[in-house]
Length: 318
Image (tube, rainbow, N blue to C red; front, side, top):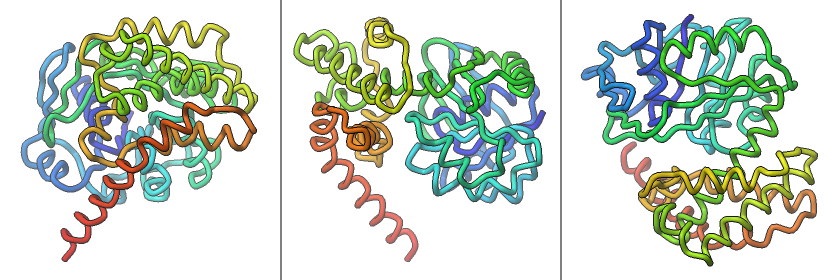
């Protein structure tokens, strides 16, 4: 099996490293300083699954130069999916499986609009990992959990084969016959953590312990559940309770990726998570006042981060 991982951040770097360590052929699509470090120094992973270095790393900014793959994992941020989708075509064979693992619920459909029919599947990743510096991934907590499911609502032999291969790399695998509902359940869990964390500017263990912000967390989850139902997506009746139990089990200092990006002044997935709830609520005429407020409160920081990024790109190109 040959796997192409598109994106070399905390998720993409960790999966690429674990798969390569298990003997699976891996190629990385990366860019900038990250690409330079990968090509010259390799990929370093610090993890409870063992610290290791992959060297050499097959990596390029140009997917055309990497050849075709059996599996393409798309691990870029949700706001980058539409941009990167056409660039994936050189990586695909007729039977290539494309797995998006972004937070949010729109990535698979965005890829399906551009890529060959039937190539895209649903993917959900649960992991705490990030880039400490270019080429160095830090992973904490439990082994990464990757859930796969066909968008049509079934478990297929091709996904079973991928699951078996990935298990050998130390990745916990699950197969789902209701992947769209599970995508919404993950959004119900992770989006409130990111938006409320960014608004309160404290880690999860702090805002979950304050009655007022804990109530906001529950209400945000309930809004996501109501919006999903209005779209015809039925999350489990106890989805909010299950998510709150997970929240209470998170270690002290935990910060959602969207919260981290906003706090550090980087473009975030605000519009693909919180903004998506607001858009879908408007579309279905569902009440989601807390999400409207959260988006409005965080939007100035998001716009400022994107302006800084645009300015940096302009300066770098002169």
